[in-house]
Length: 250
Image 1 (spheres, helix red, strand yellow):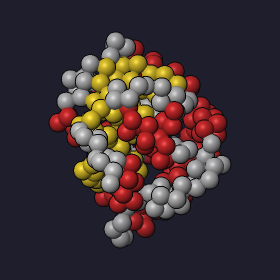
Image 2: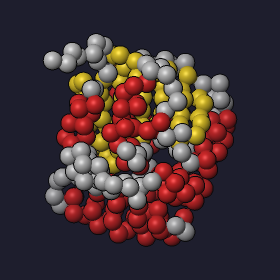
Image 3: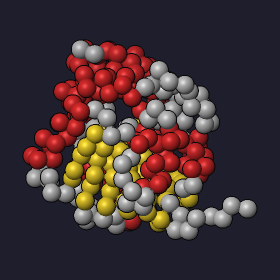
Image 4: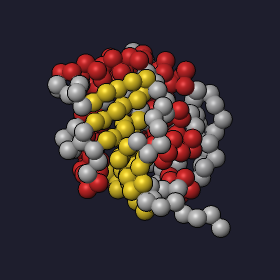
């Protein structure tokens, strides 16, 4: 387990090797559990996230922490030329390639092993960079976001879809019970890996969501960041842009 990230809140982080091992183990059940445990809401959330990217008309898109490529496949309905996905789990990427092939999209979507903190792509390679339910797994949040900023072209957009913590009572309390107690039990029973579904609430609870993440994005150099809450705050979409001109340092 790594050191906490002190950007607005102390964040519990994990080494790449631990996260890779965890997701390799749950890969066969990952898609089913995502849809089952969210009551299918995750599909609607991804669609909304892609809708918000539509106005930027991206031709080249990078999907960080692509997992089994659900977001990349959702983004394929944009008029994009190419979508690249990176993930640190070989088992997840194997499933991603199978799904991409089933959808006959291998000519448009390419996935490969990699981490957010060390993207192999040149500066300003993409019109949009996106990540869904993966940013809280970054071992180094600041470095991962800086890498996403680096490979984004000026005027391009970053889109982050991530779990967040509902603020309204009594929904906040009810959801907290489900998320921290019921979800690990159900997810653990189905996947035979309760550890993975204890990991999920632990990373969400310590992740700097809402205005904390907005401030971090601004500090990295993104402009115009805003958030769009989904399903009473269970998840949030964040959109920000890379400025067309670098601001002069005084």
